[in-house]
Amino acid sequence: MVVIGGGIFGCSIAYYHTRNYPGKKIIVIERNEICNAATSRAAALMTIVRSKQAYIPLTLETYQAVGQMEKQLGESLNLRKAGMMHVAASDGTVKELEQLMDIAQKFNQPHGYISNNEAQQMSPWLKAGEALRIGFMPGEAYCDPYLLGTFYARCAKQQGADIMQGCAVTEIIYKAGEVQGVKTSLGTIEADVVIDAAGAWAPVWAMQTGTGIPMAPVRSQYWITGKADIFPEHAPMVLLPDAQAYARPEGGALLFGVREKKSLYASPDKIPDDISHFAFSEDSGMNDLAENAERLARFFPSFYETGIKYYVAGFSGYTPDGQLVMGKVPGVDNFLLASGCCGAGIAVSGGVGLALAELAAGDNPPFDLSDFSPARFGDIDPFSTSWLEKCAMVRSVKRSG
Image (cartoon, rainbow, N blue to C red; front, side, top):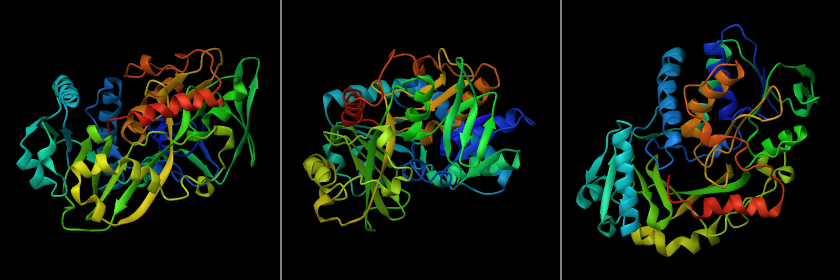
């Protein structure tokens, strides 16, 4: 089996494949270094309770995997189980919060409401008085996304996976409706199954089989402040749906992101092989931040006086319905997809890895993948402007974490 792409999805697939099917060969091919593109640039909120319930079992699997890999490696991932605070400041978001509480109950996740004063004490930067109701999910965490990705890779290598870095896939070998392997910069590799987990570039490879992956690379961006006493290291993550914003601690500073009205996107075939050379924003997102400043400052009053120290941006794969693209490609034998993370790739990585490993082995995964079908939008052109804009709009209106 060959996996195209050494991001967190590719490494997770390798981990589960080698764990559950020892002795079966798997090769992960990465043209740069593993986990150096979208994975390392993620805000890495490992949100469990969310409105898209099909994501929840996948995320719970990630939490399980963390504990198993820590034991295997004898190291700690330093998962920050800080909890998630949901701040609802309008009738609409209060209703959404009540629905989330019902979902938390359904999945047996700890949850409850906290007072505005409690929220203020937990997160001193937050103007909690703006909230009508505040929910708290104490079991939720965030992590170092690069470290999690490399945990998957290291465990997979211990279990027999071959991870080829600095090796570029140049072509998918596709004949008579069947994928038979890949051509790379280091030679041809035959394979009984090929999995496209190439992130922003996934549609480029899939199109070689005539498959239009229903996703688009859309910029995700966040900012990190300087350190200050109002940003305690052990404070919870905070979702501000009325400001279309989120925040979490970052070593005594605050990492926060907002959703701009017009999200930047790129055609997959126009993205350079190394995204460090891609101009995500000429002004480090300052115009986008200014656009959202008033809404953000409503909940973060010291925003205008707080210095910004770092700007981080990368691509997430967005779909029109905000769901993953995962599973077998209809009409193409021996070809699977793991794409369309919609900003939740770190959280769902364990479930994605397990599901794809099971599918590749011809078994049934333990999850319902019907919401993630690659064929659910019919035939699409993943490089057309109309399609790219349609996908980008989903991020622009996103309110969850």
